[in-house]
Amino acid sequence: MNLANRIESIGESVTLKLNAKAVQLADEGKKIYNLTAGQLPFRPPKEFVEGIRGELDFLGSFQYSPVAGDVKLREKILDYFQLSRAVNLEDVDCEFATIVGNGGKHVISNIFAALINPGDEVVLITPYWVSYPEMISVYGGETKLVETTIFDAFVPSLEKIEEALSKNTKAIVINSPNNPSGNHYSEEWMKDFAALMKRYPDVFIISDEIYFELSYFDPAPTYFYQNDSSLLERTIVIDGISKNLASTGLRIGYAIARKEIIQAMSKLQSHTASGSCSLIQKALLKFDMSQIKEYLTPIKNHLRDNSLIVREKFREAKLDKCWYQTHSAFYYMVDFSQCPVMDRFKSSDEDNTDYSPQLCEELLEKFGVAMVPGSAFGTPNCARISLVLPKDSFDEAMTRIMDFLIG
Ligand SMILES: Cc1ncc(COP(=O)(O)O)c(C=O)c1O
Image (cartoon, rainbow, N blue to C red; front, side, top):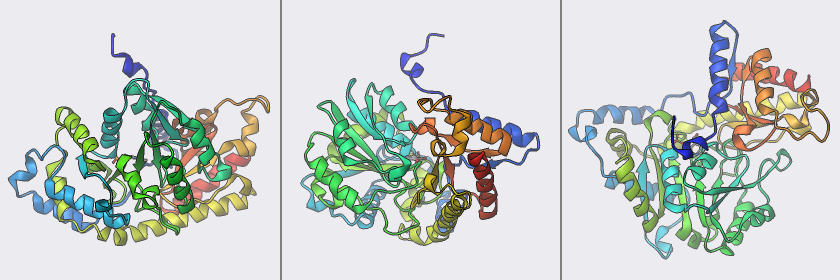
């Protein structure tokens, strides 16, 4: 069939393939530990759910919302952003606005659409969120990668970032807290990054902060623009309710940026998607955002406990060298390349092939544990596990992973 070339360039999802296999094995009666989840398996706060119920009686909840989102909700989002990040947008020399889209993913796609011209380069840090490179390529952009390793807990060096910047760089994406590494960058790193970006005034900074509220070890995430708020003039911040209100299916995400960028995104959204769900926007407008912290406290305790199980398992298996401490979001990256299991896959020391899909397939078939191969995140011979499973099941799954890693 003669389909558009841009579709040809989109990669197949390895995750879907593995998930299908996990479902098939479970159907056959095998005990499967599915560690591929990209969402919290908890109900949203009850006040928010009640708010949704309460809005069902109004006609407006079923009708179009303004394209960029309910006007009052947009004001509330700007207030929440300033309060939670301790910034004052009035201190910055431009006007800001926000746009509500159908989830963070939709908003990010609109940002790339609004910024990228064919041939423009966008700098991504590995491991990256799976959809960034695909979106960049759909809009004709080129991805420039900055690699990290487990030895620096997947935090990028600023020297490497600077090497990746060129006269063709349109934007750089920072995702802190990070999916899939489960880490956020330190305050010092953010300070140095701010200083670096001051030297590249033409580069937009896309700050994906969707996991901002989900850090379970102090210090909490901070951002480069807190050191120099003038950087906000060319920063686009992304957030939403998928992760902090455990509401991935409600599809609400938003971006905050200078007015001209939001207007461009809004123009596009008016012809491609219209405003996002009126019902959920109205319920969110009534929801007290200061409750997010309290709602997330037991969830963050759970994530912290599971992150400590990861540490214990690596210690018990005497694989401490292959371990790093996570602090945020709800993931951990297993690095196979540092573990004995790798010897069975590599043909020689010089073999740099990415065996992560095969490693994950064998782990699933023989040990019943599903993880997402590092190939999806630009990190060869690694795999992402999700920390959300109940403690007992998570402990069992980690024991199986260790048996695989040492074998
Ligand atoms: C880093 C990152 N950014 C954005 C998103 C998109 O979230 P949403 O579900 O709101 O589209 C995700 C979802 O997994 C994510 O992990």
